[in-house]
Amino acid sequence: MRAPTSASSLPVASAVAAAVALAGLTTLGGCKGKDKHASDDTGVVRVADVKAERAQARRAATAACIDGLATPAPPGALDGGLGALLDRCQVCGVSWQPVVALSRIDPDDGPGPDVPPADRAIAVLDACDALCSTRAREEIAGPMRDAAAGQAPSQPWRKLAEVCPDVMGTDARTIRFARGTWFALAEVGRALWSPDVTAAQAARRDAAALEFPLPPYSQVSTAVALPESDVLAPWLPRIGVTIAATELHVGALPWVEVTDGKLALVPAPGDAYPGVNVPLPSAAAALGDLRGALTGSKHRADADLSPVLLAPRAMPAARVLEVMAALPGPQFLAATRKTRGAEPWAEPLGAIPVSLAAGPAPAGVPRIAPTGLGADAATEIQSLLAEAEGHRDLSVLVLPAGATVSYLADALGAMHAGGVTTAIVVQEPAR
Image 1 (cartoon, rainbow, N blue to C red):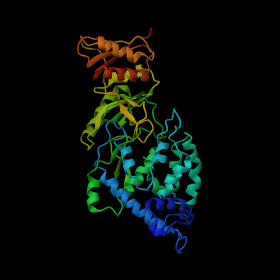
Image 2: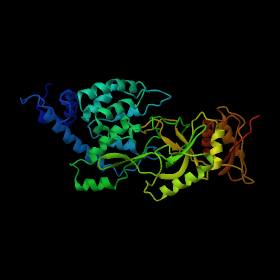
Image 3: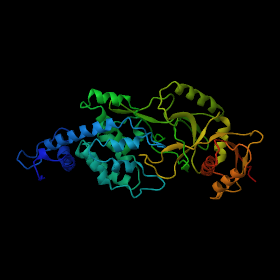
Image 4: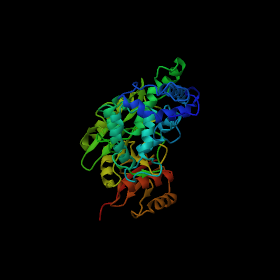
């Protein structure tokens, strides 16, 4: 490849682009570090020169990343500021958007217009020199195309972890989170702990809270289809009660920390998410034990130990009320964002900020009973609240028979808009 000027005078962006274009040379040998100069003649870009330019650009990007670590997370961000961190820390000289976009594909909606073709995601891997062999490039090409089409989003990253294990840095506990977002954060982590980081930079890095919530993925890398809401609390849940039709799990929600250049799950007691499977009568004790064990742990200031209830949006709300009645308050309904935000994961986890309680209700508490299951229920709830007498911060919500968890989420959002902070939720008996 001919360069317009000598390799030593190439601008940083051009050097990075050239490095991507020369990725084939760096992988033919099978591993990093086995490439040779293309030529020593003037006017010919040499791989060694391009790598030197890229290393210089990486040092500059890492310095800028460290300078921005003290920047607070954007208000209301459900990712603890991870998306903003990745925007600031483009340590491979290119935007993370192509790989993050693959991590943001909603499993229900499929790929949106922001999802680039697979070759752009592979170009990001090339910019990071992440493909350790020709085999790696060949084996992830097909799965990456499938992921860009909204199918099997974890497969290209699992394959990358298999053939280039040092790149993804996953293990048996973290492989469920294998996505482009994990890859990007792993690259940032390596840059933040590189030998080029100065002592002053390391001090600022070590003072930062590099802990971020992860999606509540199961062992097979799928998530509960949570209800959607744009009324979400500013704090980050730490404890989850995951509700299925016949099972109930209590456990710490997964978080990741960046330390010593590696990614690891934030230590938490008990089994990995979804936690321990408990019978309903034992759920309160299991929750109390977990909260007690986590209370003494170090947390980010915006993390909260109030449990959130994770339930599929199509589940009958009656099942959630059954669990609510067995647990002490405060507790909150988990939801994901209805309007897509900047979080670098699909379906980020949040909590609707209305504390839930089971009946009976004290005398004089407003009783809000929408008449049906239609789309106008939220408007009706707000009208009923406006007409209610007494303090509305505590109100009774009477769900109509047949209400789902999705309906409950919409109703709680409307209650919050009407000034309710705590809702005693009951349900009409089926007729």
